[in-house]
Length: 340
Image (cartoon, rainbow, N blue to C red; front, side, top):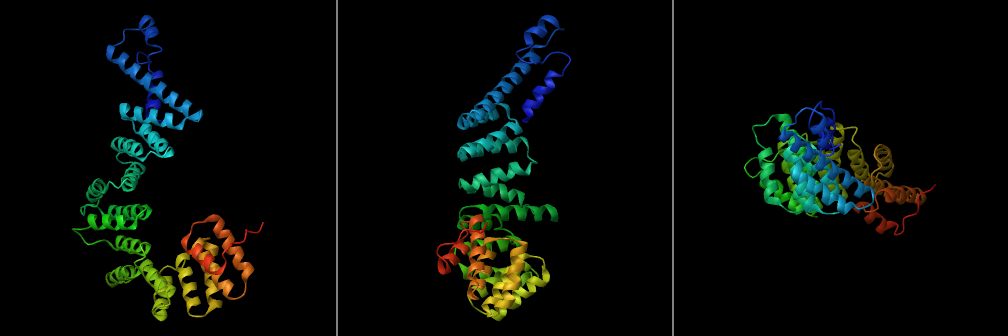
């Protein structure tokens, strides 16, 4: 419930005055004297409540655009965090990112400690390519004076933000701008490497991962990513195996590392070992990329029906996964329907 509605409910419980425009006249005639400021505050609250009710009725009638406009107007008038949050949601529902950003900024201004408000503003600024504003905000939050826990939280937030963006090159520019005066933290550098991989710049990705491992030799995700990249391209397979095996030693329960280990065994022509690791990875995490790898190993061993079953399940869950689609195009152009 928006705060303004809760405030209206609290008005109804007051012993005198501030009962809203529908009851003001009755209160004046029957009750004790009411201050003019209380009367005006009640009328303002009542108008806001009726605007909320009108917007919700429009929404129930399927008039989402009308409801979105009504909530944005009320957010501007009321400066209420709850109303602004609702306005943000509705603006996104009608695919109006500019209105969503305006509403989200009102939301954040009135609830500066709300992480959802900050994340909404950040992501909308990223999508609308308001990079200068976003970078200023991120720089302010990346202050080195913050605690270690706060820095770690921020590093996770900025990494997730740029990875969710539609363009890897934009994400890289933002990371470079935010950390242009300080050394990029290890986890952020890893994110930058993954963005380079998304751009298809594999050598640049590997160079970043090697520089990361040079200063942080126990970064398991960097080891895994570098080892997987080498194995996938059939380069330096012994180095790849060593990297992925060490990553697994550091994080033995991680299904992504199990997937890399299984894929490396496959590249080393050890399909029995590969299937064991890939099946365990897929059991823990039925991810489309793991399914692509498991299916390919099964296919190579003549277990086409089992491979088709795995691929079909994964295709149903993640029809746009790049690795799965590439695998299907090479080996099975028409994925079979999953078994009932």
